[in-house]
Length: 603
Image (cartoon, rainbow, N blue to C red; front, side):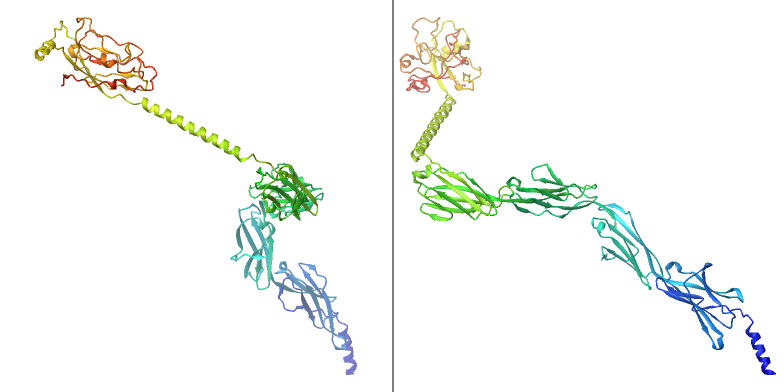
């Protein structure tokens, strides 16, 4: 009886529903995850729940798909445990999120929930900004690096164009902008215990043109195309133009210049130019030379004329690219490229730089020793050759006049110079004599007596006469005769009028007497004829030649009283000197010294 009862109870119990227990999340209630790294969350349900429960995952009421379901069976067909694994790759935004694992079955349709919170660790999340973002070259810019991280940030590192910026450690960096920031971005790297992250940014730096690639010299054969390239960098992009040096005409715009089918006239220097930017900075020019390979260009240089049987020298100038193989002088009976041959010698020297693009220059000199008549009538050829052809020119030798003619011309010039110096000396000598001064001359004059003298001065003279029958003696000092700038002769009274002989003042003009020589005072019309004078100048006047140096243009003034002369007046004018060859400069200097005693009145 006991066995059947046990079996009945067993089957009764086997048919009854059992609700599930609350599930369990491994690692809960808070699970630590790392952002960006895949992870699994495991939810288990244990017990004898009938029927077998279902495990579901929810976030914010929304069911999550992708969970893996596992069921473990016990002996005798009973369910031991049920688990569900949720696979996910969390991000920094999942930090603090709550996930719910729910176990439900027919015995408990609402099910039972177990919640778990995600505690997320993640490397820094970086935000990099620049203020201002667009700048002119030379302005200051500030970079700011902001980051969120779990665990907290442990360090900052700055770099420019991949190269570390020394000394930059914090979340802020200040720089002065230049053109390099346009192509070399600035980056900020932030680190914590989980990892690191970085961000970079480039500045919009406006700057003037900067030359990056200069044009290179170009050498092309005649008839081929020539190309030049010139690279400028700037923000905004600069305008590039091509010109020929010395010419304002624009040949092309852009980084490349093409010259089709060049000729000798295209050889020269070409200029690549960029205008300054908006800031006024930068810009400039670069140039390169075009050399056109062509046959040599030969030009005759000036050669000095030579004397017959004397040395001579002829010259020619050669420009060629490529350089000439040789420069050859040729004439009727031969040719010579270098060295000497008979009377001829050839020398070659580098020439100064010529017009751009003509190639290297050479000067070839042909020396001739002992010229002959045939050298002046024939021509000499100077020629040069390179791989592209040959060029040449004809040089003639000029003849110089004979040497005696040169000597004659030099002699005539010397005689003319000597004659000019003699004439100049004579003129200077005459000028110095004309500026000389007259020396003082003292004359003692005997004045005839007069019966009408009534002044007290007359009585005094009679008392001093000691009874001798002689007229009054008058002492007159003739002033120096000076030739002034206007050529006039001036007579001055040495006493300035203080003394007046006999109380009478007489004015005289120095002139030419009718008989020539110095004039004599006229005889007094009041005195009796034949009155004796103290001096008789007639014998001497015949001995004195005429004075032609000073010729009066007006007569002398007569005196109102015949007894004395006290002063002279300035003549009106003098004529030009007209001296005889034997006439002394001052004729009155020839007077002999009078033998008569002279009575002078002194103060």
